[in-house]
Length: 175
Ligand code: NI
Image (cartoon, rainbow, N blue to C red):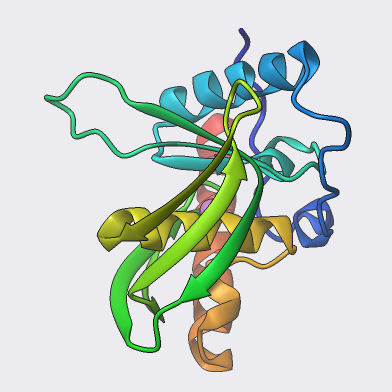
């Protein structure tokens, strides 16, 4: 396993649409998922899409366990939303590719999803709460969409300005 570099906005690679995994889940995909998980834990974060480390494949890793709980990694290959609830819920989201920015986003409160797991087995299940938020956020990454793209233009521009400022301060601190 290896910790990989996480791309951050406005890196254009984050805007591309990821391709489905064809021909089942192979050891190569599992190696990528292992790297993604290690990268996510090191960040630390609760979810990561492959494109965030520059791999345009429809693969996501996630771990929603609290700090005092044992690790509970989840792996999603070719995830699809089967149904979305009509009612929405707000959640203050953040993203490893948009560091330091946290903004409230409204999304369907519950979803039903279908995906292949680490071993290539097809799973269909319901998600609500943080799980529903996180899977929708990560699946947006597969379409080249960031959570700040859900904000009003004013809020998005403010967020990007803040991000630029933070990056500049970081660069200066490194000198
Ligand atoms: Ni994200």
